[in-house]
Image 1 (cartoon, rainbow, N blue to C red):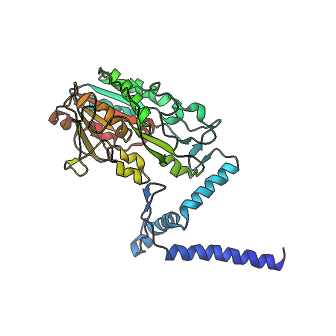
Image 2 (spheres, rainbow, N blue to C red):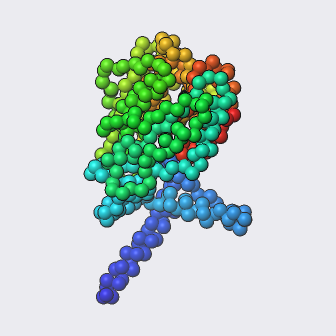
Length: 376
């Protein structure tokens, strides 16, 4: 190695190290990452307690801070994904690149080790209320689109979680098997973990049929509202080569007769809402267009519906399902345990609930830490 080349490498190394270090200090910190759809770690000043205390959290938090605030972080994520792809690897950051030209992304799925306990919380709910309780798990995208997975991907949904859950429910719980309810090329978003509007409609048909209702047939085409949706799986993978998803609405605002109303309870107080908050299409988290995003309680009222009052204990998959459910029930109460600590037993009594549906995606049911609230 020549002296000039050694000097060049040394200068380049110094510029890289000290340049990025200076940029980390001089550039303003970002509070939120649009690409990753999460809040970023902020700098925490050192104190005697967090440096020398029992936990010694300063260095741990500082490492997270540097990782989150590193200059050009989003570009580095994309570069890493490209390098993994060029090396022939099938995944990056716990996301599989699909075998369909790597245009479909699959978040890795790991079944729960405590499934019996999780299902027992549903059984406890059924024991506490005097109305029919239905329970359904939405299969993971890796189960429905198994033919798109890369070869020999180990951490995927093989259908066993739903089968085992069905065997663990008590006789007071009506289990709805959605394993074969979803089919087709557009029932999930390729870049996100959620089902699409088409998938939500297929789920609605299976659920309403199992709960004794009459399916409302929509004899018109869905409406395209966005062709530039990149979901959370894409954000994790950094797969910049993947084309965006299209997003559709199907049930018109106000329902089929225009008389349906949506009331949100973001902080316990009622706020007028809607099926679709189109302003969310201007931000990264476009899926929050449905009902305006995460919330502890949302009530949809349709006085023209034939069904009575349905309580849905759910995750975010129900946001795109709710407009369909509103076609058949006078009231649909959407209850999210992550943001709502009310007693479910008392809520059923106080709100004239006629049916309860516990509906989770397979992945969320396997990881949710709030399921114990079902038994309260």
